[in-house]
Figure 1 (cartoon, rainbow, N blue to C red):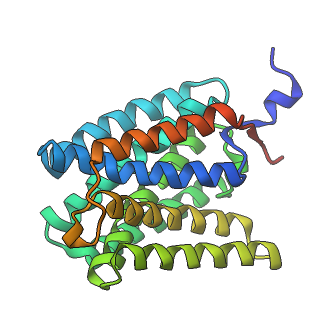
Figure 2 (cartoon, rainbow, N blue to C red; figure 1 turned 60 degrees about the vertical axis):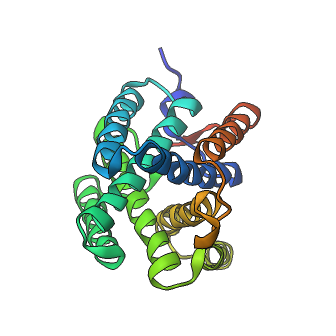
Figure 3 (cartoon, rainbow, N blue to C red; figure 1 turned 180 degrees about the vertical axis):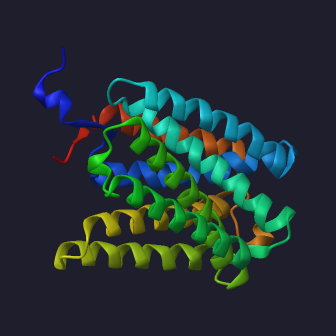
Length: 252
């Protein structure tokens, strides 16, 4: 029988500095890993999306069925959302021909719709209130849309706006720094700031991932997508194993 403390814990981790470090690494891995499957393996965006969507569904079902917070399972699911987000955004932007601006606009609309329906159904968007399978489903669908939007935003900034990968990274680092300033020096909704930061860390990971594996003549370092993905995965596993994360306490 679970005690009162266990009943007040969520299946998502506390939002700490370690959370954000792993999140950025996971989003970068999503970019290099997604590109490894679709480009290096020459499977294409549609097949890649199908593969990662299947992995995402399995991971989400396992996460929802889990009785308590498991750090490795949680971050596996996050990585699944960011890889499927990479391939899905690339498919929408490139294969469907709607472009980065069109893709970003469509995905922003989907993200806002997901948040609106979630709020309408449960009355809160705070991750501290995730205490039921229904809330978890809203959480993971919203995360998937945010990851996909972030990929489109990263590509839009680096390519369409002509800032390149380094310039794009600086833009998103500056925006995330602004979120930190607002967090510590204002009373702006913590829930709003969380989702803003969650979205912004994805394009940061996207442009960093592209910087690592894109050709030299395109402004990248031309590193192997497989090697970059392996290093990022090892980095994430090291943080998961050496920095124990606690489940977030539930709001009452």
